[in-house]
Picture 1: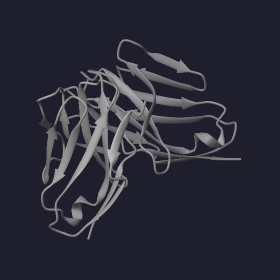
Picture 2: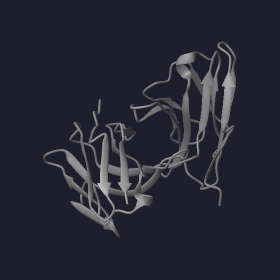
Picture 3: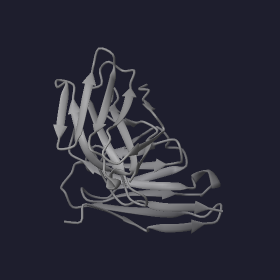
Picture 4: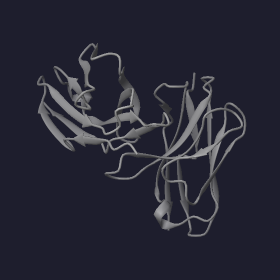
Length: 111
Length: 111
């Protein structure tokens, strides 16, 4: 089955700096790659996604890049703000079209 | 627009007790899911329903049953709760091929 690895597990950044989270996957047939943000006590919220026919997608301060050859994709957050502090999850569709999630990255933005 | 609504938000069970977690969505989504979230393990799929009248096992189905009551509602039942089922449970729904929208979760403790 699909194996999704997410790094780092924790990330501390200064406000205004950039944050990058990387995920690798094993199934070359995977074609959908969403990213979720989870704040304390809440459910995960979809923040950006990318499909396999696109290499990069951007939405304001958030961007996702996909390298299908190397089987990895990354979340980039620029100009980080305290409200970006949360747990971020990557996910990948497996051969049956169901999502497999990474273990999560705790991002802490310090003023 | 409520999105995905889960009840209850918190529950404490004794080992061997049974209970049903309720979920309803108002987005007219065909697909619905139940996930559990444990520390350091991301989100793991318990059961899913691709459409009204169909259900299928996910990654960790043992000890659970589900019912897709209609297009809006998808319930999760624990017949005989065990301490290993202590977790946060999330219901989610999606259009086919899209990223799920999650509810706010049920925090379940089995003592």
